[in-house]
Amino acid sequence: MESRSRGRRRLGVAVVVLLLTGAGVGAAYLLRAGPFAPTGPGFAPGTSGGFADGQPVRFTATGIYLCTPDVRSFYPSVSAAAVGSACEEGRADASAVDQVPQWALIPAFAGATVFGTVAHGQPNGYPTNPAVSTRSALLTDCGAGGSPTACPDNPSTLYLADLTGSTYFGRNGTPDGVFPLPAHDLLINTSTTFPDVQWGTIFVLVFDPYIFPNRTTGLCNDLPGANASLTSDCLSSVPALARALVTNSSFVASLARCTGCGYTPPGYWGSAFAGASREAAILGAAPGAPPDQLDSDLYVPYSVAPGAPAFP
Image (cartoon, rainbow, N blue to C red; front, side, top):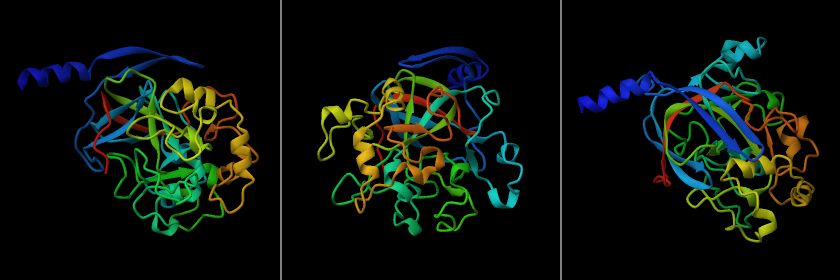
């Protein structure tokens, strides 16, 4: 036991350089290995799921998440009382923390149900899936923040600058722009085994339900009506995400025009996406922006191992 502890301490001060590669993605990241403060306010130990290199993986939370810099450093007009302890989406300081990027895949096609609150009709934390005629629950890696299915050591709320003043303001009992952390899947651009590091979060809106991966298999062929042309960009790998970010989908465009089908058009997520027909988009980023460009102040420490965990 003592030998293992000494080994982890040595790992905790080691600095390594990781080269991440993928279709349309490539950058060197300086990162500091863990362990990171394993106990303290807000820390909930446990495991959650995600995807790496097209395969399901298991994440083990190892410390307290960071929201840095503070929301008000990006949005000084926002009061401390209004934001509370929320992390933010919209801007980031990529030099604030030694990190490796992770992509939080939000099923934007499910509209407000991604916030998982009673007000939005989803107290279990999972959104509903409008691609399924029964509107059944869409089982994501992480349920909405504050719900029974939320991932361990995730913040409960998120300040979404793109949704300030939205018609959904007030429905969840929070100040303007503050929402429960949306339900999401997690994607990383590493091998299926990776040490304990800080992961910087990039929020991705997924508009096409047919490329949203199954959390236990990583496949995208289990929805009614799915076919190869709609699932070729299944978002269980970063190269697939890079393609989805620049792929216009006639399927998404047709869903956006659909009334009464349960689909929420991209315009709900901010004026930048009004009329969009791309399969996916990074929240707050212009079309064509680098896929690995951070868009939030949320950093979460965990280690990675192969295989899906036991989900709630």
